Image (cartoon, rainbow, N blue to C red; front, top):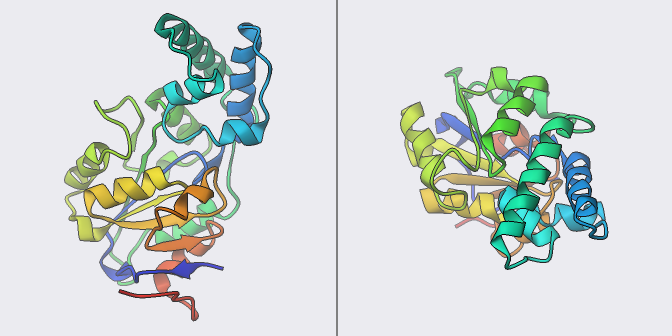
Amino acid sequence: MFRIFRRIPAGSLRLLVFDLDGTLIDSGADLCGSVNAMLRHFDRPPLSQSVISSYIGDGAVQLVSRSLGEPTDLAFLDSALAYFLGYYREHKLDETYVYPGVFAALDSLRREPGGTPRSMAVLTNKPIGPSQAICDALGLSPYLFRVYGGNSFATKKPDPEGLLALLEEAGVTAQQTLMIGDSSVDILTARNAGVWSMGCSYGFAPHTLVSVPPDCLVDSPAEWPLALAGEGEKLVCQD
């Protein structure tokens, strides 16, 4: 059941920006496998998928660093990162899949209630190479006018640089834009850019949404259009 904390003006939304991992796709198994392959290579004990999933969201460098216990040896970290990225490049689609309901929801959200087309994009902290390749392979790219990754700009989320670039490219205002993601990183990015936000409780880091609440919170992709339509009595509070 979705919860609305602040009503989003769905009729005026012209740009929808999605996080990737934990929002559009479940990539947990492949990321876990790649991290543990890196750990084995450096004679480190493996980690559970739940632990590794809690490290996802801030980019590959932070994922590898946290998995290694945040080493201070930068040369070692660079070597571990290179191994992880190389392994992940070959195994990024072994088990990764689009969450159920995503395609139907994207089809529903393609147009505003009045019939005006909406632009859609991905803004992720995952490197752009695997991000674009995954979107292409899993059939997400036809919905997207742009995919930006963690190395597409000088900064990563929650810095608003990438999101603001998407607003400019789409020719829209902040009030016409919605950011959808599963972690506080995405919600902070939305806040920093002054756009609307939707949190996803089914992703990798829903616990972080407690301290940084979105404008609305959904339990599945199928609820994206329902929450925007404001169906039912789901308004928790309104300011």
